[in-house]
Amino acid sequence: MQDWLTVHEGSAPLVIGLPHTGTDIPAAIEARMTSSWLARKDADWWVDRLYDFAIDMGATLVRTGVSRSVIDVNRDPSGVSLYPGMTTTGLCPTETFDGEPLYRAGQEPDAAEIGERRTVWFDPYHAALQDQLDRLRSRGPVVLYDAHSIRSVVPRLFQGELPQFNIGDNDGVTCAGDLTQAVEKACAISGDSVVVNGRFKGGWTTRHYGRPEMGVHAIQMELADRGYILDPAGPVSSDNWPSPYQPDRAEPMRDHLRRVLTACIAFAESQR
Image (cartoon, rainbow, N blue to C red):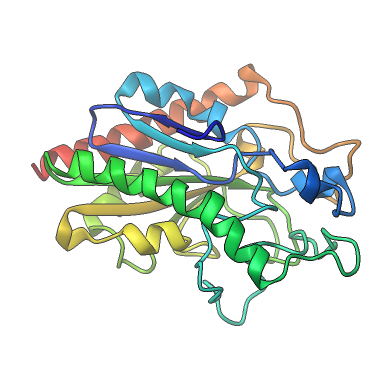
């Protein structure tokens, strides 16, 4: 197993993908970038820590420690946009969510380098995900839960303030409706805002693996960061972002997420 790839095997019918929590950037790549802070700005900050309780629930976790600015393992490897006509970042991003350049002029990765990064990081991450899904699927239906977060206000990507819980099943394609409804109900108990298939309908991971007719039900959860850390309402800088992880502030969200993951496991078990 590569040192950047972490797999915790559990016995429950639930695999949690953590594609964007990494901040590792090889020195040779980082030297070509405009800013070390910008290169890590759009990470899903602290999401791996937020969900670490899932190990005790028997969940399987697959995480890459490599920054999404090196390669985004939740993008279509062919380069096709997941959201045609909308602003998004690519397989090997060249700008931040806010449109700031990640690379110095002329230092962006070319097609050959992008292919190499895919071989080194993208393919092994997805091979690990597939292995774990196959392992658990041999015992019956399984849920793939792709865990994400983002700042509540990113004007270039969406208008206004993002709902707290953003559930994606690609308009009902990647999982059974009963699972989506169970997750939505578990989120609604929190009293916070919830949307299904809003701005975030599920990335490449959800769309690639979600085959409910084959017993793999994939669903994405995009959290607004304000639910567990201090989330500046305006522009962010190295002075105020990322906010530190505060266990007391995060615990209520962890309680909500325990309820969500419990619903996912209960759904999968009901299909066996």
